[in-house]
Image 1 (cartoon, rainbow, N blue to C red):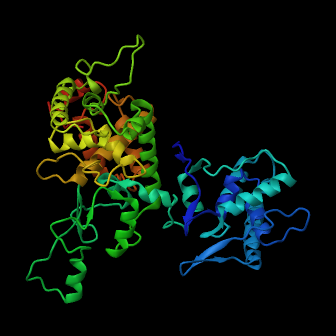
Image 2: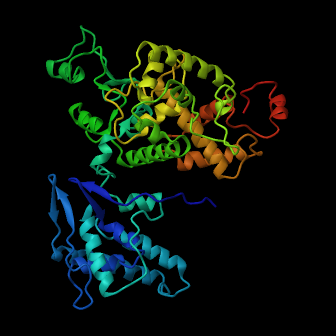
Image 3: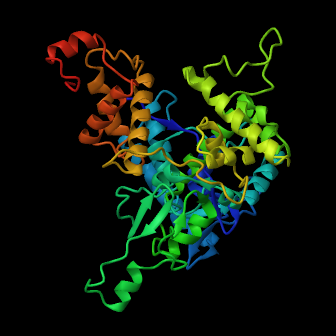
Length: 488
């Protein structure tokens, strides 16, 4: 029996700069204290005093870009829908009200909430105010939980009608979006032709048609659109802010290309990464400092915190530490330190950590990727020019940056799936590969993974080549394959 993947994302959306709550979400965020029939009756003003609740709450729907109130009389039909569903359910399951009819109760919860209309919402602050008023009059022990655990299908049904609404507030538009993020949130399947643009690590480029192409003026204008007309530069540079991306796509004829659920997931990953480096590297403190010494910067760019101390109080020795088991790490530190000392001797002005990172990039010096990931993940821009933060590694001939990123995404998904299914990724038991494949094809067939039998096979092989996954008794198995390293 397959398990159900549960998620706990916030069930709110943002409309016209205000946070809103779908009416279908109300039963879930209140722990079913406000059931679907109760919600419909309350909004229809069908409950008499002193038992009425949500007495001043008004629901809205969107029409022609405006939020219009749903009149109380319109909820009468919704009440009938909910009660009709309950009557049908009781015919099929006469014991649905019995305490031990768990299947019947689950069916009621699943179906009744969907009888509330899709695309209808209440303003969150108004709902919380009414909920607080109700709580004072009739206390209960069920708090409002805006991010309840739901399976994917239920979450999608609750948010039906709000697919194009942001899941985050206006501040999120300052978040930096790199190449891999762009591929994920815009579902870029073919980077060579995405809405008429060529997607590369540094941005979206216009491919000009041949001079002899038979295009009418309107068609040529459409396929050659560029905000500045400078075709040697990207029409949209990456990384960019989420706000810049939102402004660019409609002008480029790609309104609606952003998957808001994916944006929420990407920004959540950014927040997790930022928190991790703040805790393990004191990153926030180092980035706030107006002056960072050359030796401190060299250590930080090797992912070594100069403030770290061992149990005896000793500072880290960057010439003896193999960061991430990389034996080249001490050499990298020495090269960075030498370059930074030379720069500091030539120009003794104070430099921030971001300044030192730019020096390393300008000099072509290798450094640990953590700092680029952190810059990209920060909600606010750390500098006017974030350089190539978050850019992908160089790829070999015949490969595109998108291919490399999608492969990495799929490799991570395969390893995570194996671990979740209790397999040792480096020694998957016999038959385990088929189970992992079935799970990926079932649960991860959508963006950003888009697993098919063919893409799974290629990603599995790439994961094996990278030393991320393998089967048990691999030496024996490969021997049976006649020495073919790609036998499975």
